Length: 277
Image (cartoon, rainbow, N blue to C red):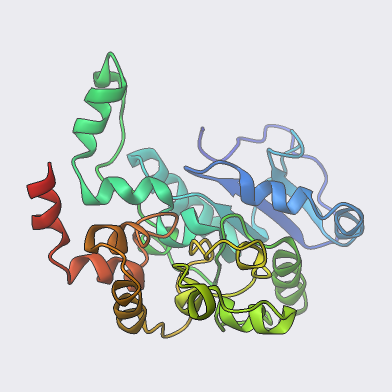
């Protein structure tokens, strides 16, 4: 991915606010959530000028941009420089998805030797120019709002865009997945059947899809506001989960989110895991 595009003959700017969508290290799933808005996307395209969105169009309009949506984490020196350029060109910058808000699943490298991974996977690791860590966008620039999820919920994404276009705070719930289970009438899997579930400490927004299909929450939407992870860990242990597995369930899509990472940091997992190896 190159730096911000150079515009020798930029398209004429319209009077509409400009929306730019930027990709860093990610799977593109959150950008696809925007495309998945379908009819609402057509309406949105009439209200804003889509100035930058490689997943949807090759058209580029020079900044500044009224609203930038950033997907992905910073994993290279080039990323670290590019996000500074994007910040300077954006009046409002919103990060979307687990990669942009917490470093993503690629942040598992933060717990190990990234160089060893490269040597194991690639025949010529010398060509791999990446940082030793994967970090969220907020570790590099000021972020005006963070929308979590892996991927983000398309309706919440639309709410965020609408809110910033009219100058108000987005109405995004900060409660847990448990609240969504109660709203849809799903019986608690942990209480009723002892199935491990991260719902009590995970922010809602997904609609509690996994519990509705008899699967515990995987924590895709990241930590809720003020999560009580200590209480959940005690419950998981009481239900028979091994110490090593307790910490593995927190080391997935949002492994580097401070609330989830603290579960691993304050444990004896590292020494126990080393013994297993």
